[in-house]
Length: 247
Ligand SMILES: [Zn+2]
Image (cartoon, rainbow, N blue to C red):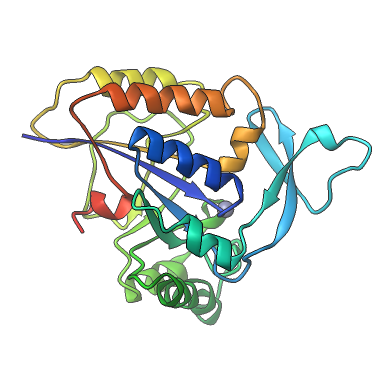
């Protein structure tokens, strides 16, 4: 008999992760935080654009309401925040570079160094990666395999056909983003579906700073409602990304 498995996969390691992890602990949700070991403490801003965002180095002082903080946790804070038992730490590239044109040496710097540093700092093996801006090439894939990555997460752009899951693929395609217009409907279908012969897997991805946008879908109230609905289901197992792969 298959299991129903739910996991979160959130990127960038910003300060809003503290509040999100508080909610995860309250509702028993588990997940993976993809962070970059070379940019701890970096402070930028994201301009609110509908349910999306646009990076800005400085907020327009005349219109601060148009921006949300993209303050990456310091290393010290990160060590404390991600020590939650509900959380796995994974790689998001040492410097969060676009990865589509990286040479072999640059891929080593972005992937191998990130895996090594995170492993040293957090005192555990690093099992996976999320591609910054959904970009990668063959050098990146080679470096991920050399570092024993079990998964490398992309981003989803459309509603998936089903909730089946392929553990043999290095590429992890998430099910939906927390603020997708179809997220609620898809989650309701997952919650109400009876377990089948094969596992059903729901991977929700996003960034916790998006919850500060304050739109109807990209807000704290929406994700808490989804966590509440999940926590009431008796047949869902909450896992980190690593645990999806049985490790
Ligand atoms: Zn990112």
